[in-house]
Image (tube, rainbow, N blue to C red; front, side):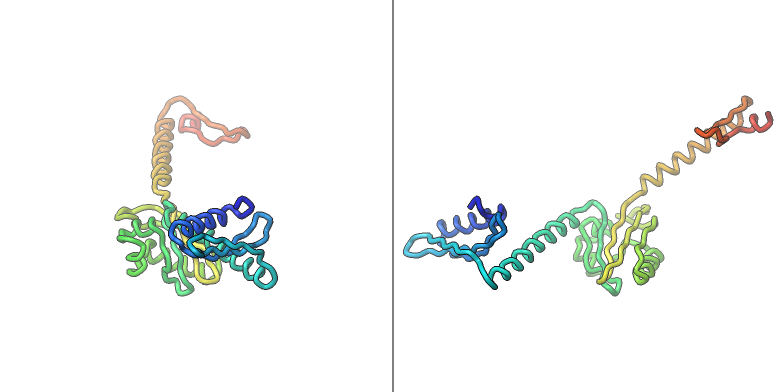
Length: 225
């Protein structure tokens, strides 16, 4: 089976093992590494496991190609869906009527719901009404909503960077908790203000210039000087 696509090789080997071990018949279309397709038909005949392979041609070849594309797209979507469901940030999808139709586990946890089904069934919203109305207006205008807003997450007031992107069937959104960044920024601001007040009380003149020799700070003693 080394001439088959890797994933089809594994599937065929599993089918063959089930045929040999339990007599389970199977039929599948496998893709070769050269881009062709073969039909694999396995049956138990007279106590023996019989495998028949034949090339797929004509109209059946086109159907096989379409089926293979659909299968691969479904597998990719399933993998992406699983990844999004486990993402550490709240994610959601809305329909054209702005109703929630999908949320991930982080969203359910953020709104204190038991699981995603409870969050959807109860239409539990993460964002406050003003933010939702602003996001809805942007969606209906075909524009993305990008804004830092306050919200209650897990029972605590937090600051979120919200991204809500419109689509042909509704919108997709996510929220990133930036509360720690805001807290750090506020702390730095308070520290700078404290340093400025300290420098302003010095009897020694203090002046700070940037790389272009522009004056960016001076204290009261420098002004008097």
